[in-house]
Length: 519
Image (cartoon, rainbow, N blue to C red; front, side, top):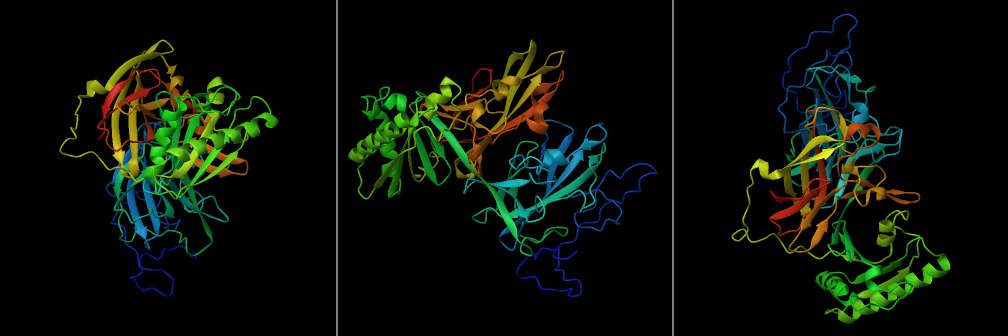
């Protein structure tokens, strides 16, 4: 088992030179498990790294955080280990338990990273953390010869199934979040993220692959947080470093023209104010068109429109030292599909990109009133396929870095099975690689601004694929929108949150709006 043991801390010294192992924290004694009867498969797994010949034992460590699978409520996930190693790596250990009566509960396909290529979404490759400050979704390292530095059913002698009342523990080794935080948000593809999980700098329990012992590739996804003005004159994508403000060409210009309209001045004034507040010395202005017309028309028109916006912004900036760069891309860089009128409208744009201004800071605690609502104030009813449904907001939680986590439950209160497809039919559903719970919006009514679910961006040979930072409802989770009578599922979406908002208007699918306090 060469190169299997992580160097746990710089201060630790080698005490077992014969086996090349560094000291590690030993697991607390676990209750022994009798061997399975003849013909039965073991329903538990050894602690990661234990020899296959060791009798399987249940992991009895206390849970640091827990969540449940949206698709199968009998699958419980508990974080039982979160350890920073060498100041730069993170070992995440999650206990998967079958809390129901279903036999042969499969786990491997559910725990796989859905942002990887098909055929590579196996093992525990979907375990990760959200680096909120860096706006990055961090996943396990990828060695040259395997999908991830994480639990492998064959190598770690894990069962394919979890039997009722039993559990297995899986792990992932990944880059530590930036800034040496005391806590982080643990994410999986299975259920809602688990915020505020404490990170220990003590050695982890067990032995794990050392990412410094072999060539590995960090696997990260940029988190993009979009928002738009209620009048649809612009939409903004925030990746934590830069702002990309897409101004609607339908508002800025007449059809086939590059002369700014009277209304354009007020739209550009907001963008100029953001640039003035930014430390940026360089600003990119890019014109884009939809797929109507041809390159001979779209290319020069998109360039002239970018140049018109550049001149207008330059004239109203209140500070010096800002350099502009203008380009026109015609229809070659769409943000949305061109097969709907809404997609075409949003693709006709001039995009202004610059360094993000520093946040204004949270509201004054002395004047910020925290609103507490009774559970019935956060619950509404509706219908799907003739069956009564209900929806309840379970949390709108502020995370570090200007992020927010919305969690909510949807229940079938009827007597027959029904699909709730409306959850996946958001206005921008076609811009995602796979269908997801994207038909959710947060609105800051006072600021007249709407927030859309976040996106995980994955570079490809053709450009960028976008995945919703929310519950997935396709692929191995295709049945997530299907509800048996009395069944409840919990969903989640990640958003940008305005710094000063204490309450936001929440709209989920076809349910009526709710006023929800930010926790």
